[in-house]
Image (cartoon, rainbow, N blue to C red; front, top):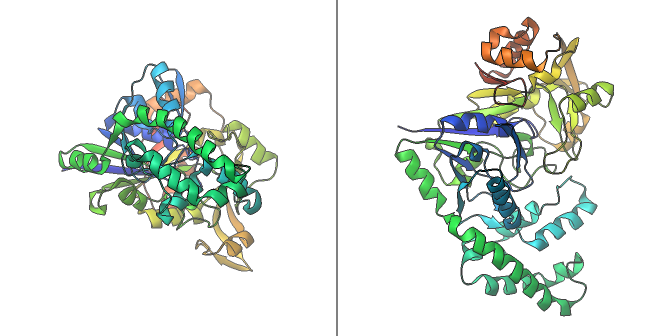
Length: 430
């Protein structure tokens, strides 16, 4: 009757979801972004171009119906920049933005960067956390419906008055008398943004549900990764939204019975950006080699990613909390040329071995990885990668096939896609 697939990160984000969503979007009718904000970055290489997106769903390059749903916090300036960038590259986004999504304001970004200097949880400084905080507090938030409506400036004035002390504390304004000027400047700037965005605003939950009822295929695109989920991640070193598959239901306004598939995206190794414990992190030349070979620098911030071996404690936890039905393994090519490859199969905490994800950050900080060592395989060229993708899984070196089989068996989830390079033509469907 309908087909709906949720794509989520099975690690700490940056797993290559953009490429996988773009690949799967070929057969989808609608692509929906359901969480996060422009703290996420998805890179797509297609038609000879490289697209770096932060808000707009990856399906835009396939000319699909794309939706920014209610669970997303929207920086209107960034959204407009992305629309204009796509237009210059020859793509007119068939875009809808939920009227129930929340808007990131200038002061949210200042609060974010100022506040993290004390807490050091590794925020991107894009205003995501403060915007979600206002959403949860209910009194000082601005939804897209408010933003493009006639009462925006009245609401903004009330919110700024409520936040006057906070604005002073974080240096947004230097003195109370500057509040009126700040309000006027902000209203003028954001009024232009609202005029641009207004034609794209819809009740997207209704649109998505009608699409499913009409038998259309809907692809739900998650941002960040399982271990950054505000409820199920390595708290407090997490993001401010639900990054797990369940977030697609609340973040897009569909019932759980509507979801038919959940694809977890995992790198063939592990990376993490920002602060927080990372048991398999490689702080040596091998870790640096992975970083350079995998171009492991953040799409959003440019920060170098921390690199480590594949962690099955994390992967099995992701299977559990997301209900994964399939895995997409990315960047298998980055491991080519290594003689030996390590995988973490358990942790040792206070002398005891466990394959359970620790429930506290204190336990995770003490976790020492228990490794198995597997055989590596020879490095392949770009031309060989394209040949392998055309020929299928059997064209991979034997050791690479064994590595994938090990992942599949150990994680307890079938692998459906293997990425062996950044291009669309460097993808194997299993």
